[in-house]
Image 1: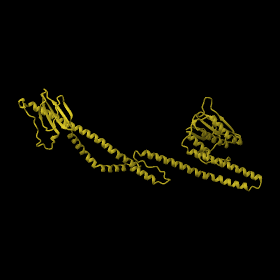
Image 2: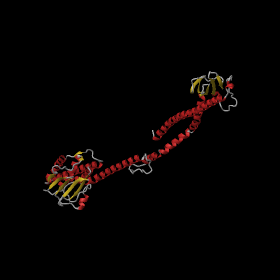
Image 3: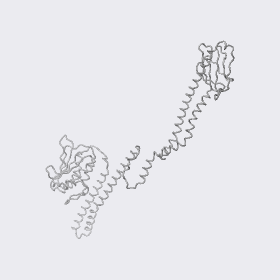
Length: 446
């Protein structure tokens, strides 16, 4: 069910309920006001009768027969719903304006009493004289009051019932107008193409829709970023894999056409090196793609640097032995912590492995590659030739390798290290060694 229909249904359900509560309150208040009005008149009438009796001489009252009132010239009044009676101290009826229905005498009564006379409810007011010479009673049918309350309520309820269809149409129009921004937003999103990820304007959106529009714009931005990473990865993969595949194809042709065992062995060695380079390239491209898709660390715990360093040196040891590079690690002084932080041990192993592998590959044979822990930072350095300012500025670019490199590589190792450092809120900087020679990568807090 749509929001518009649900809202209209709720309005149609709640409106009669509210009207019913309002009607009940109106009837109750009207009955209170009517009772107050008529009770006041009855008290006034009883007091007037008592005042009239007080001004009458005793001689005039002696032997007086009960008087009957005349209904002539009553106007709009219905005198059948009213009654007056007066009794003396002995209980003799002195005055009565009714035939048939007779108000009962209650010597002990004072004030208002609700009675039932001839199966009809009456409200009677009894007034005792100061000396007890007589008792005055003024009564009225309760029907008269209920009829007045009904007439007052019906006079107010009738116009509301007559304008009910107009009110329903007005509510339907108001609901449609109130939900017009939702329909506009729906139409705009339905009219977009699959590649249209532009943010939805929030300037004219209602306050209730701005959080939703903001959330959608954030989603569009993340989707656009993800698609850009995928397109970049696809383009990079197509560009970088083209050359290794061509080289492998050429080397395979050389292997097939080899005339001697020595020529075939040399071609197979080159083919194996090409396959190794291809495997390294694909592995690092996949690692970089996973890191770029990561919004944060999956698991954070206190890093165990001895375990990390032991594994990294073990992984780089075969390459170091092949190139006759000595691996060294300088630990912090006793009592000092080695760059204390929380992070992912596996990712930190990848970071240090890439830095140490890079230092080993480009260090002169017979030198040392050192992993050094210092207060608040760690560094990896070798004794190679220092890089130029232009080369240092381009370090970390994807697939960038300086010219004249004899070692195989893909140009992704430092890019991966920088991404892992950013995930751990660390900064990775490159430069020359302490004495101005060699190359050093420094990992410190951002």
